[in-house]
Image 1 (cartoon, rainbow, N blue to C red):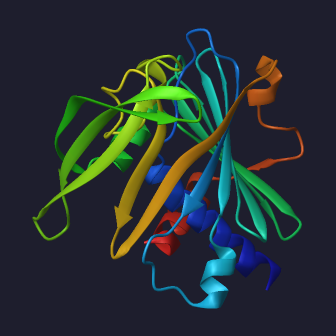
Image 2 (cartoon, rainbow, N blue to C red; image 1 turned 180 degrees about the vertical axis):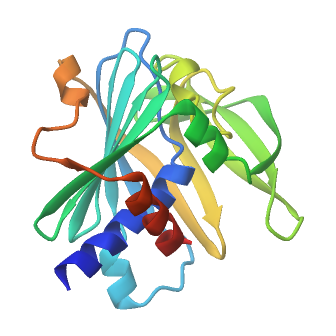
Amino acid sequence: MKRTTFILFVAIAFVFSSCSIFKGGSKSFEGKITYDISYPDADLEPAQKAQMPKQSVTYVMDNYAKTVRNMGMAEIVQIVDGEAKTKTIMVAGSGMKKYYTLSEEKIKAQNANIELIGVEKTDETKEIAGYTTKKAIAKYENDYGETETLTMYYTPEIGNKSINFDNPFMKEIDGMVLEYELKQGDMVTKYTAKSIEETNLKETDFLVPEDYEKLTDEELKQLRQAGQ
């Protein structure tokens, strides 16, 4: 039971890593951004709602961004290194701690099925958590050949393009996204930054702790299949 529960959470982490969108690199900002996560009009059972994250935190320093989500019974951490072009996923839960790292090549393969039509940057602005953000709209084709949109608000005051390399919707966005809505099937997930705090960070904050065990390629393959 313990292992089955843990595999479920790692599979969820794999899904999140495929679509995570709120990352940015640092020009001068170093600190912490806290997001509220909501599910507008989602038809979820109480047990499902209990498992869904309500908040996430992103730590930003130089070309690093670390995002932490609490899934109730597990914690999922994603670290993006914009210089090395890698993404590391760590999952801790049910008494186990695992991690895996994706290279730029593997990230491209992971995103290969996303049919991005284009990203439109507009002059529309919005104040979020004390920052003036700009609106951008990504258009993409869903599994049924229909065009859908993803609306996001970002600030050029925090972030740069390089650390967004892993996300097909974001790689042309020069700044940190502070609000966006992502549609996955019939469910919409909305992220909104509620607070932004400058803090002192160090490079070791973005490394995998020694008590985490690396997953093998075969284990990753199984988890990817479980997350489909």
